[in-house]
Image (cartoon, rainbow over all chains, first blue to last red; front, top):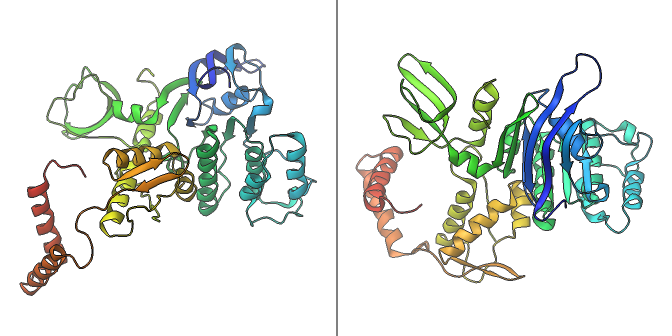
Length: 280
Length: 128
């Protein structure tokens, strides 16, 4: 833990990759993620999600600013390409996990992730993408980390495996209070599971906060075309005389509009569709 | 023991779905005083929802006096709800009414619409 109650903290964090013509992958990122949250890291391709996770894992050094995370022993990171030793068997890979994490390793958890779906004597090289994901998640959860960083963890999995592994992740969070940061493009996968949101766009943070607070601050409205001031319009469309908009409220919404609360998916899609716009 | 089914597209907040399904189980007699609710861990492992959502639902049920948390043991049902048992007089009257509605030529949707409108008239403003 970096400090009381905060699992991951960035101060004016920036990362610029070397090489001519390379811009900033991440710029002026400020956030503090409380311990025990399950955080969705969302943004279009190239937004800086993987860079942020690699910085948090200590695999990259910031170009400017700082990021504070638990040390290597108390942190687990599953990269997008799920790097594993190709020649080891599944059983050897788990044995390695146990030997590298003396005193912390939880074999029962690791085995539950592998479930009965994998032959322990199968060599990693011969596994499918989804099976490798299982082994990588087993290693990460078996380590019993305080902070679990997952870069698109579920992309390779079939819907059933995805549901099962997400359930195991949530169970681990329930039991040990593990803080999880998970990037994903699959919004339905995040809805319900995540209670905190970090939305990146163009290397900057556009939204940051508890999901229920962010949802409560926004309203979806439809009605006649009109000026929506003083509210902040995240996204709006007009069809003939009808206006549909997602707004961040400034005070109560008064006017001839039909309003409803947005879902997390509504909120994310509206923010992802707008390229410039609302200040975070 | 109840098993919760979470519908992510229903538009009903997830914690409310748990509250409503627990109440439904109480009304139907599937849960009785002294029964233990599943632990947060059991619920989230089966449904892949956030643990805090389950805790929020259980706090709400506790606030309404329906369940109580016993430290280190779990969350237990305190009371039953409504007059739910299958043989209650109210249920009998309703069944009788449904038979008459059918005889009068109403179909399932007509009956549902009628029932919903009466519910609305008499329970307007009550919490779900």
